[in-house]
Structure formats: structure tokens, C-alpha cells
Length: 86
Image (cartoon, rainbow, N blue to C red):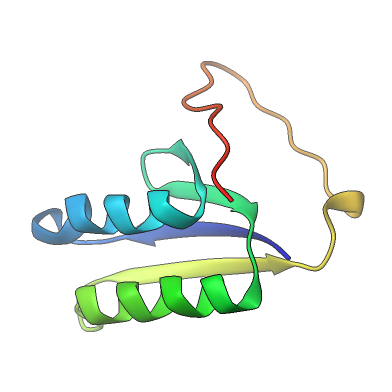
């Protein structure tokens, strides 16, 4: 499955969240990640982030796309990352 993950996490925890997300997805912009991921890896990612974040202060949003076939990505400006992690 293809996912887009965005987060808004307190500065104290943002570095750890970045490291966790980079293990599973491609880092697109400051708090935006995307990529193909298996159900089991997505579950592991959510568990790691769930242990890190403070649900009263932080938020993580994950968009699930069944297929990238019907998506279109347009980017204006500098490309932050082109590395693939799967």
C-alpha cells in the first residue's frame, strides 16, 4: 500500500520521530513522508510513533492510498529527498 504521513510533533520529540519515519518511508519535506509500505511495517511504524508522541500535544496523520495509479504528484520548488526506503 502507498501512504503519505504528516506529523506535527513537539520540538523535544521531533528528532526521534524523524528517525522513526525515515526507517519506513521517504522523507519528502520537513514533516512529510511517503512511500510503499507493507501492512506489518505500517503497524510497526504506528507502534513506534505511538510510544513516542504525546497524544495531548502531538498529531500524526496517515493517508492510505490503495494504489498510486490514480494519484498525481506535482511539486513546485526544490526537491528535498530522492532516496528510496522500502
